[in-house]
Length: 189
Figure 1 (cartoon, rainbow, N blue to C red):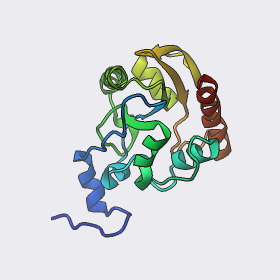
Figure 2: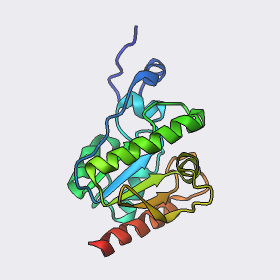
Figure 3: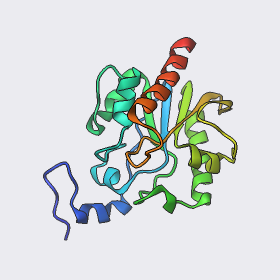
Figure 4: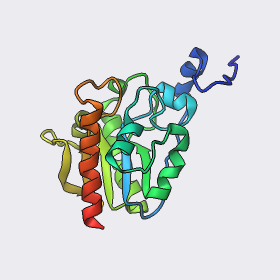
């Protein structure tokens, strides 16, 4: 029997049960930006909100870059729609680590993302994690930043994984890279 945790931090039992949960997309037609994470971690799945693990630098990077006017938390994720921003996962299956995903899952996720973009028609899509973007989309030489190709007519950007486990990018570097995306969005408007 799983006992429901009354605090924000999931119990060990809730984390183990999270492998069967899904985190709903935050999406609407005509967004200016659709952010695409790779897949939910167990912590995120357990609480049911995107980029939910403490230490994940996603929410601070959005704020520091100027993409949001205040620092949001995972529990505020629906407010992103007010700013013309949505969030989806490339692969819905929660895992302890993204390395548990197969190449087939990543490639199927790329097809699903394209289908969502065709339906919802955001102006821009930003995929968060360069290595898995390269695998999912077969773009071995892709670099961080604006991509020459589009996804179903939407401009495409690739950003680093904001996980606290990604020590290659400091919070300041993430804010700068997210800020470059914000500038591109503003220039387009």
